[in-house]
Image (cartoon, one colour):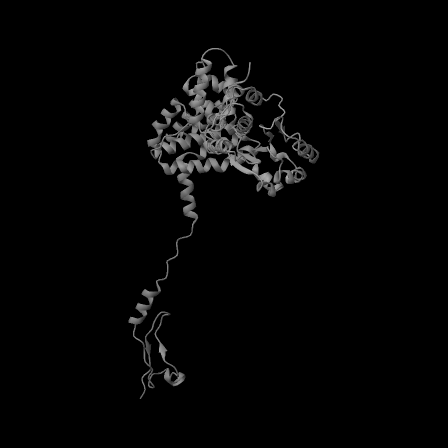
Length: 432
């Protein structure tokens, strides 16, 4: 039995999910005969980079291609390319195992041979292209700049910055397309189509959990669905998905919100104990707590969170009016600052317990009060204009020869300026 990720792989550009900008550009290039000699497909895993490269190869070698540039998907050439069977005109390479300069030279020599027929094109798909060495890229520089006719190179990578660091001149010889992550709604819609075609019974909450665990990858979502289906017979529920994937139950996140709202610091220790008894990953729980607080903040400001089950969403809507957005922002800041320490800590339990205690609103207020108490009092700003006006109002003593100090100091040789740096009035001493 073929896996769901391979069985429901797109066969046309129109079937690519969320990658409309890539599909439109490639379809138009094939229809107008303006296909480039080299492409670079960059993006996260499981979003359709290799699939788009195969569809491009199918469109270039399809016998019944539509005028819009779409392959038929049913001819012998399309079927062999889509299944990954042996093909003289389409070659797929894994750069992780063929990364040296000798492999690049072999690829360069094979690209010099023409296609099997005059109407077809030779397509070389190099996956994990960032694994190629600097010497291998240098060996491909010339052929990528002046390739033979009807030869197309497609490089797929998840780390394009490594290619830029190792071989920056390569980027100017390729057309780059950045693939986007697939949102939860698009993943859920695609999973529903697969479930309907497979005639399966899967709960909506289970689809939401799978879409959230896929992290933006359609291949990961289909693989997780296949894994959950193989766990047992009967309808797929949210509890079954949590058991298979090892997810933290929503009830524990609801208990955390209740303890925060009701200022129940003593409930945090039994909460961590339940997590350890269930065998849950504490780092995963902290990440889920951050997602829950983010959804709480989104509901508090009038938004609608995505990727949440109905039960957890009801709990969030219940506690959202009782926590001000400012407190939620402080809690999210505390969680974000502690994620890296949790991954490196030897005593994760103690660190998570202290972290949950710090999420109490009273602790946030006390820490803010202490920080304010440590700050020195603000200094009063000197108003120079007001000071100069006050000094101008004061009487200035004029010099007199009969004064007791005049005998010692004598008459002033220059005019006397009134006190203050901003005074402009000058008082000359009286003369006889």
